[in-house]
Amino acid sequence: MTTGELAVRHHVTLEPDPRRVIVKLFVPGEDAALARTRASGLVERITALDDDAAARLLDEVMHGFGSRHHELAATFRHHFDLVRHRVSPERELPPTMRTLIGAFFSHEYAVEAAALCNPSMVEHPDQSALAAGQLRVAISLRQIGEGHLSSIGFAAAVLGPGGDLALAPRPGPLTVGTRVSPVHRRDLLAAGLTEEAYDDEVSATVLGLLPERFDDQQFEQTLARIPPDLLHRATAQRTVEQLRRTIADSYSIVFPDEVPLSRRVLWPNNPSESNGMEDARFVRVTGDDGEASYRATYTAYDGRQIASRMLDSADLTRFEVTPMRGPGARNKGVALFPRTIEGRHVALCRSDGETLGLTVLDGDNRWGAPVPLLRPGRAWSLIQVGNCGSPLETDAGWLVLTHGVGPMRQYAIGAILLDLHQPERVIAELPGVLLAPAAGDRDGYVPNVVYSCGGLLHQGTLWLPYGASDARVGFATVGVTALLDAMREG
Image (cartoon, rainbow, N blue to C red):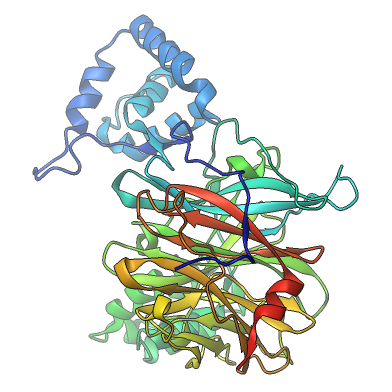
């Protein structure tokens, strides 16, 4: 399997950095097969310290860890609030003691200690202070730490002029942002209830009482208005629990404006993604009103099941997270088109696990049954095919980077071209491989893999960031004209 002469690798790489850490809640003994945790005993031992000893110990902790984290003392206080029930309600603790308890119930987690991979690249919101021919880009990253737990991180780079690529440094403490109440959509709630087959009098009543947009407080107020005779039905409480679970799938994360993009981490925030947020495919979308924003699809994993989720952001500072529904959103690998096509919201998908397809959003906010675009058929892709990010618009058609899996579970990248107006129609395909694992790509956390979640076109060049065996992120380029000329009509 060879790459041919089209794709040119750059020497610049992004390497995983074990110094990039966040602070997580730590409850001693909670993962052991015990009747209770060791938390209460720990609290007793901490509160037995005198005030001077507690102050000295907290100073040592802040001196050792304060520069490694954003607003560390506030995080400690938050963690104390989470374990406050371990302290007798009659006992009033001074601020220093509360903060120190929070420190003992905290630990560092290296978000990319195990792997860094599967990037996507979009135009950065900030295009200031650039020379002619340059473009600043935002790069999303799948970062994997202890326990194979994935989160979404970011980097920045400047492309051009010509083939130049300059990665921005990634120093400074990370932050996971602040979770805030989202503005929920009634139509998305209805789609979720339909997906889970919860169509009864209770769910219909709640949907009838809710406005088109509502927040968490309005939702709870609406639940309180369910007529008592409905709540007495045998299935009522089960429906109410499902309503709350469905609502919990949507949330918002806000980052401080002063924290640069490279220090922001999108960390799992609900049960459906508790074991990871995988393979974000970011795209800069243009609405029918001409306004640009950012969207991304990713795979939520709870340790047993996967689910497709969407991120929506105006400027990569506030992120709205919502579930994706319907047969087209099942399985991994959903990738959104950057604009509507003749009024339709369209996406790539792989709902059967092995075939690249196209799905359209219906009037009920469900992604419909996919139309097959590409099936396993080449020697290098007989196991499965899928996309490597959102389609890229060219005058010749929608350029779709694909991936295929072949012998020894080796991943390689190819390409197809879709009709601009009828994307269900494949009009050309690259007969060979655009990028395959070379000698420097083969070894890593997951060997023999090159994989991307999205490239970008700039001044006639396709810029392709790619994960190399989940060990590092590399970059390759190919001239768009040369790539299109190499493709064969379907």
